[in-house]
Length: 465
Image (cartoon, rainbow, N blue to C red):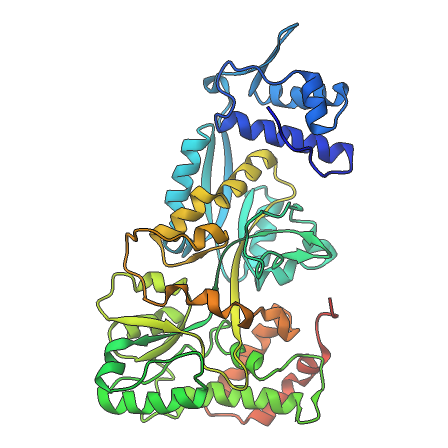
């Protein structure tokens, strides 16, 4: 057996690497029941450890009932029926059952690791951090899902201590590989991702003799098309849920706004902010009849789209999963732009509770969910984008209907921006959204909104990294 010596500098990390590797080889069947492991001296050479250290590592595997130590013979792989069942808890967002085929992934994990039972615990989007903190304090979580916005709350000395430092997963898309880092420590690994995109009804466009949206579109192009579509079909030409924290910030990004920066000679930060929020509102309310109060969530918008009541919407690859069985003929396109193309990138990651009592099993689950097997379940059975590049870009016989431009995301990677590029903390975004409600309803002017939010919008949250 030949393995590359790990590039680790300390004894503890080399020992941990040896134990983790042998454990994986045993539970995955690379070493079968009754097989002898390499001798202590061979293991020492492979992993750069002394015989004493190797013995300590084998003691750990023996305590886990993965091996049996035989005097003058060596370490033999034990029968799995003699292993104790372990139970770990995965905290997940409710929509991941559909958007990631989570049940199928966990079933595959149990086949691979029959001695580990995974129970799921639904995590709320709001209040996420307080809930996770409570669950961790009560030992209710081992592995958890976390999105990029919620990760803000873990980016300080206290919050970061709640999450275990992880090793990068090879093959993750470079654009998201470091999405969950704090002070050069990887605290979560990307599991799935999606840019904000434009969804449109192909039939409506064809019947109105309109060219379909493309990467050159501006928001003025969208407005003109929306007016024509509204006139021809009696539907909303364009609609999105304005209060969604993953929609309106796109305009700030496209306008070059960044908290804590004064702007440039041509445009002040105030002008950029006001132009952005006015565009957000005008795209929706300046239609023959305003759909302002037709939605309480993004799901409501997607439902209207699926019923043919809206011709164009802002959506994500995640939300395409609600449309996969729909009857309308739709496709996707990059977002229209203001000056240059930019879109907001949403990322869902996986993290490990640093206080977990079953950390080894938790790592096995995390590694499996980022494995080719699990990521291919996402690729083949959903319209979501797995974070593993070779899985996401797999080509073969499809088992479900996809929009013809499904792989469009690959071409717009240079336009991806994170919420952190606005230099605003998640709690600030919540405050801004609340202040915008009256403005969107036409009950307040943009200058008043700026005046109240000015301390947040001009202070800046993060120093340059």
